[in-house]
Image (cartoon, rainbow, N blue to C red; front, side):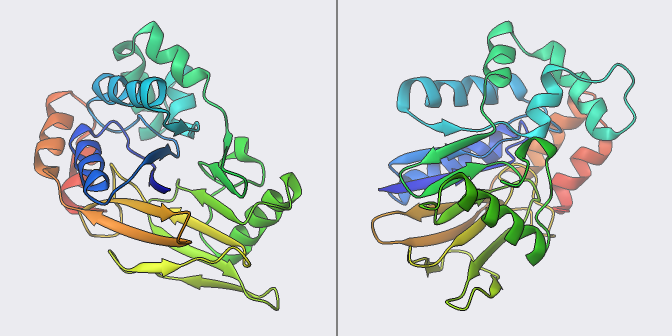
Length: 253
C-alpha cells in the first residue's frame, strides 16, 4: 500500500492539484491529509470541496490543523496575520465546510503501526512545533504511550521536510531527505516524518512538498512538485488577502 501524505495545503488549489497528480503517477493508493487545509491561501472553498470528496468518496484520512480550527472560530480581534486569514476565510465557507473542519479529529491511526497528527503527538491540541530533536523525541514518546505498536508518526505544521529516528541504542537522529530518493524506514525502529507543506513552502524553494509512504516495502520518499505558484500568488492578491501571503508563494519562504 502506497500512501500519499499531504500537509499544510493552506487553501492553495494549484499546489494541491499538482501534488495529487504527481502522487497518482507514483502509484499512490491512499491519501492522508495532515491538517491546515485552509488559511493563507485564496481558495478555501474549492480546496475543501476537493478534499471533502476525497475523504467521503475515496477513503482519504484527515486530521485537523490549527488553521482549520481557527477558520471555524476566528478571534473577534485579529492580532496576527494568521488570525486575519481566519477572519477572511470564515465567510467564504459553507455550513458543510465548517462542519467538516470542526469534526476533524486531532489524530488518526494509519494501519496498525502509524499515527497521523498535524503537529506533535505530545498534546496535539497545543500545536507544538517539532523543530529539533527534543521536540521530536517528545512526540515519538507520546505516540508510544498511545500504543507501543506505533512505529511511525507522520506530521506537518513546520513547513519543512525532515525525518527523525531512534537508533538501537535509543539515540535520536535527524535525517535531511533528498527529493525523490527513497529512504528505508524499517519498522524495527521508530520514525517521525515531517512531510512539509504542500501549499506554502518556506525553505526558499517554491515547489510544493509531500511524501509517499510505501507500507509494504517500508520506504518513505519525500517529493517536491513544481506548480503554478505565480497564479496562486495572483489569486491571493485578487482575493484581498495580505500581500505578504502572495510574496511567500513567490519566494518560497
